[in-house]
Length: 154
Image (cartoon, rainbow, N blue to C red; front, side):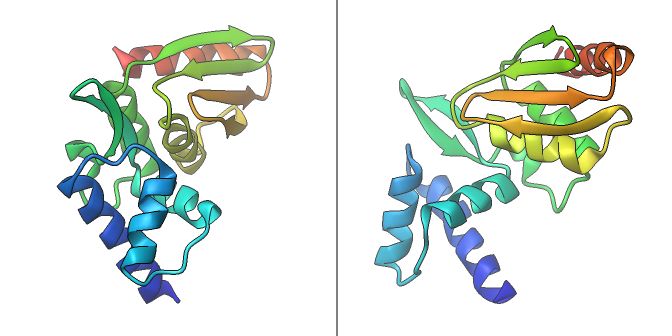
């Protein structure tokens, strides 16, 4: 099973490198044409694990694997740093939450990298398409996390 996952993810990487891919549905269709049986949930997980982000090409948002993220298995900390430098982000805070807004399709890789990095004071994260909510243990932790994200994004 692990071998099929690797092959599928290699196919996705090759696909986004070869042509503009705007949606998960386009990825799923291309994989099905090549004989892979996939669901939207599988594609979503693969996108997160590969670190794919949305970038602007020729006026259209498409999936891409940033060059800095193409290195073999960076740590969560390295991935957070790379993503925050690659992507435009807006950072806000409310109560014990830090809110990070970014490009559509880019929130999940940021949240996954934050969870993998296991920053002190971070309880967990939840992401949508373009927004990450980071739950912090308390207000002091929220301030530290907010400052760190702002620093890494500069």
